[in-house]
Image 1 (cartoon, rainbow, N blue to C red):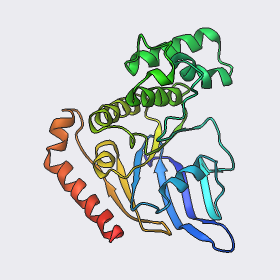
Image 2: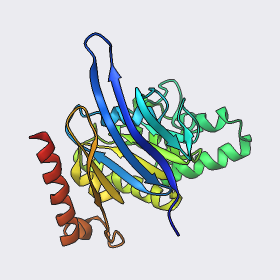
Image 3: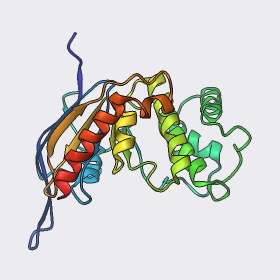
Image 4: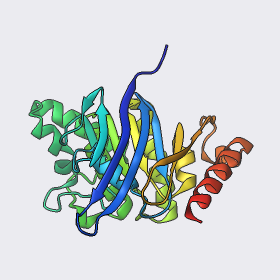
Length: 256
């Protein structure tokens, strides 16, 4: 059976300004299948985040097509959840209220909200912190809440913009494992932007490398790894090292 294409990017370009215009993206083509986890890596300023924001419906393309399930993306929608690098939590709401926010906007029944929110609080390991405010949480805890707030209403597509970039190395690995576990249990479609080649290979089914500005996809790497034995066995495996090195060399070529 041929996989269904969930996200389709066709010859997309994006230019900012008019007099001293800056072309961020030019001729981007990308297809992401339903249930697939795809990461985009590339040089700083190549337009990775711009592409993500356009797919989220926050920016219009200057040219080309952005399609989700064959329909043009024109505005944000509940089918696309987005997680930013800077958490974007409501500081006046507790952990419980932040996670419940999307479900309340969708007018889900109170008993369903309570059960679903508590399930995700348990899943992300924040039981006992339900009534804490964001200012009382560590960076890793905040990002867990941000992920749970997006996962809780089960969007069909998850868009991640450097979601762990502000975290320390140890917390980052913990959050990567958390994301991998959540994705494997839900099988939603994920598109992630990251500067971290190791992170991209560790999490993804496929890694796409973008060129320097104006950005376009110049190379793709299929990631076939056995993730069952766990992180240590995976990152020490020959298969992981081979793919990681190939992606790293491709990105380095674009930077140079």
